[in-house]
Length: 178
Length: 178
DNA sequence: CCTTGACCTTCCAATCGTGGGAAGGTTTAT
DNA sequence: ATAAACCTTCCCACGATTGGAAGGTCAAGG
Image 1 (cartoon, rainbow over the protein chains, first blue to last red):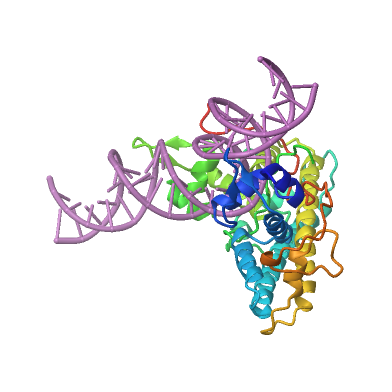
Image 2 (image 1 turned 90 degrees about the vertical axis):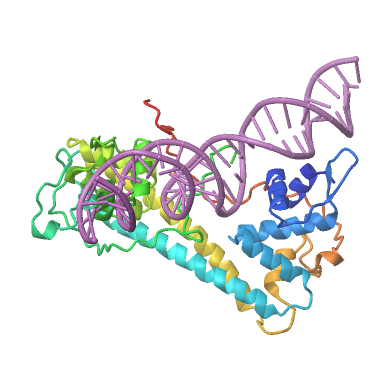
């Protein structure tokens, strides 16, 4: 089976199959005389495993762990469960972070008239001066913000931001054919 | 104020300030004779605006829109609200997606003994053959089952994965005196 | 004055997972 | 024979961010 068929059968694109091979997530498969990759049903099975893990949000590193555990028939289910639960915690953390952002923003939008008047609490909060409570001097680049529009937002300086395992608020995907 | 102070005062790293300038999100500031960037309070105010928007998960493109609206004192609050609500929807969609993954995985983990026995529903689900869930639970690739399944699944990319907000790239990339 | 260290500058690379595309070879069907 | 549809490798792009190298500048202390 060539890479195109394997991609179709597994749901992993040919591009990604080559990529997974290049980073060592999957072994190199045999080649035809012409150099075409040749996939067995077993290989496709592994690719489907990968696709399902990916659909559950596992990273490549985690998938490598899971694949190793999959092939180790004597491994303890506790090992798999540990990885899964760690991942669950991570997914929940990211989801919570997104929900917090969403709620903050929805709250602000809820207080915004949304008509043709310029006053807007969303912009107001974004343009608040840090020391706005005690002074509120020069505040806008041209003229816009009103320091009076304080919605409840306990904004601290901490910015855990999205690290390597972080949230990745967007994932790209130029809308091509989906 | 040099870039280090501006970074400290705004919460945006010097690296990112230069990056934002390079892509045209913020204008080029004046320079000292030695070529050092020199930031005014107004510039720092704009950077803080950017940091807050970023902390709310807005993309660079969205921040550009918000900045434009911020500086347009006559803009309708409806325009700001629209951007905010679109972003809220996007954040919620992503959060839901993560929660779904999390719940699926938590459910599987809940059914996993998590002891030293090898049987594990998490691995089982990942390695399931399409169309032979009932009884076909070979889990190691060595014993790749030929469940007779060429069951074509034209999902091709079942998971919408993370998508873009639909905001056009507009690519103003690198120093392009565009 | 000179040195030192902290700062600044630009440029280049890497991350992560994925897709796009070019240049060239192979297979298959007409 | 020829064209379409594959395959191969290699490079580039994305988003947002960080890291680092090579070199210039500034403020302090000796």
